[in-house]
Image (cartoon, rainbow, N blue to C red; front, side):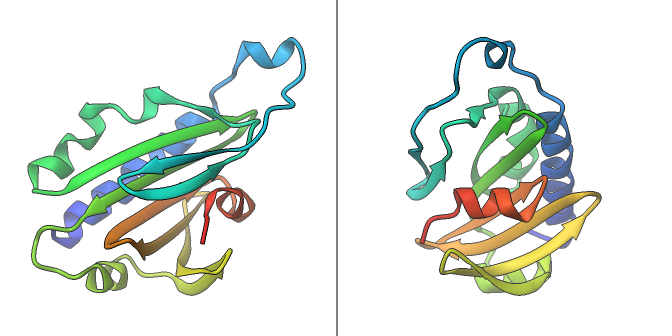
Length: 155
């Protein structure tokens, strides 16, 4: 996968996150949101989902993922929202001959550890990006702020 495809993916994550931030759940107007956290597994990688976040399936359509799959990437993404906050998590296998480490270097960012997971943190167009390798997969996360990433990332 070349830099152009990675840049397109990063842009799509930003667009999806902005859309997720603007989502509004009418169910939040009624009753309490005292729900327990749950674990969601994406391509063998576990993430904590705080009970007050809801999955936003409108941001993870096949159409959004199609350009990456056409380039040979095996990618799965999910989005979650809460009030005016949002996060999109993409997990993929890089199949273009580059290692996950090489791909992480191309994506850039400052080496950072969140919840005992070391990856690369950067900021782009109002979004916080955190990318790392886990279980032989490349994990790409875009959220409205770093605190939200910390709520989802599990060691």
